[in-house]
Image 1 (cartoon, one colour):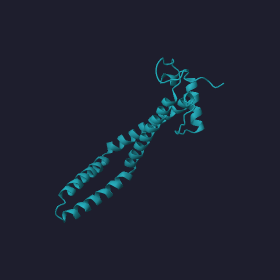
Image 2 (tube, rainbow, N blue to C red):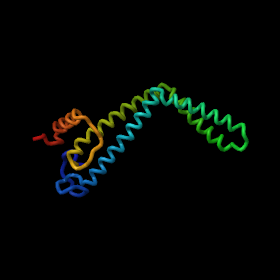
Image 3 (cartoon, helix red, strand yellow):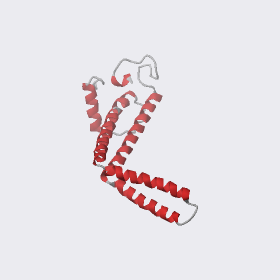
Image 4 (spheres, rainbow, N blue to C red):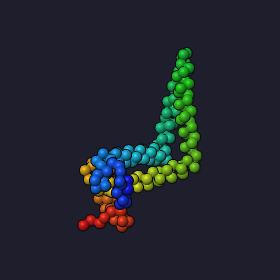
Length: 165
């Protein structure tokens, strides 16, 4: 991606005659960025739910349901395999509850949230550059105008993008 940061043109590869990425490469970059960002945002939701207690409430409910199911199945013969499966699920829920009670887990999750948030911002900051190099691509990663302008100004100052004429 040397074209992204204003380095020399690549001699070989999926680029146009001007040294810009081909339409297919633009599509691949766009889809890859969207995929990574959506996964990071999903992880953020998960980590935040663990920190704010939303997941714990779900685990407590899941534990009660599993215990009830096991107790009901124990009343009837021939359910040993189902009971064993539910007991493994119950062990997983208990492990999640135990891990989540540790103070260091909240610290770890908060740091993960911060790291994921920063990573999303960093990846999103490349979108205006990619848009400039891939003008025909449809970008669905949305930044507001102020964010786009700030990123463009920063890239111009760093010499990675020519100033607007």
